[in-house]
Image (cartoon, rainbow, N blue to C red; front, side, top):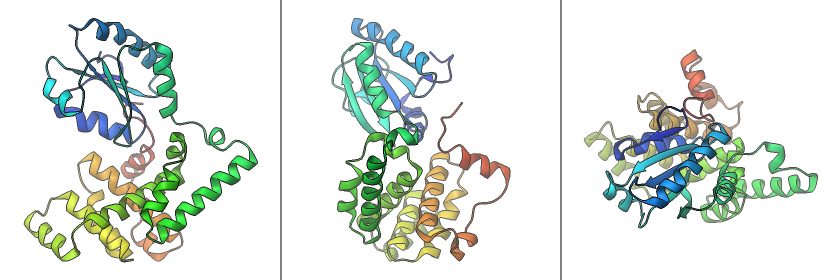
Length: 278
């Protein structure tokens, strides 16, 4: 299955890199299967055909439950075949059983990004969308996380592909993180004990953000942007861009902490909304 650039066999060790990281950019189907189960062998060619039909617009990952039963159990899989649809590092749909191609096509379509005009087609629809987005922004700016989340969660799944909403979600995630994080003094102590702990640094950046200490937040994220870990780097870039959007492009801190102009960083940022290998 590894001959195509959108169908992969994975292991528990490659789960984070192959499933979670790629799901930041678009939908990933994780297929828990066994060659000894007839329904699994019946479903497999359907999924492969769909992957071919969509030409890589989603990624298909296969995990062999004969080899990695404990991993599948840890993922909440109690029967096979099971397909889990990941998007933005979360499971947004789970399908148990060898359903028809039509059933899976419907599930895939719900998760796939659509052109912007398809999301906001008519003028009245566009106005309603804009009003909801502006309302969510105001709640985020006022620190009302639950109210903002309630609005955003009601938007279509495709809305999360909108760059403006993507940044708003990132900002919202940082506020949530800050609310659950220890105080800055505790985080600084933790960082002294574990200088390479990226999660502590993200929590510090989030804490600085909610305290309106934008310079300190951006400085912390700058160090994370230099990470060799693709997932950490990607997350730091998205968080930085969310703060830039909040401050506005003319703010002096945006210029101070702007991304390097070297081609490798430009290429990395440009690939944030693309699948690996395409």
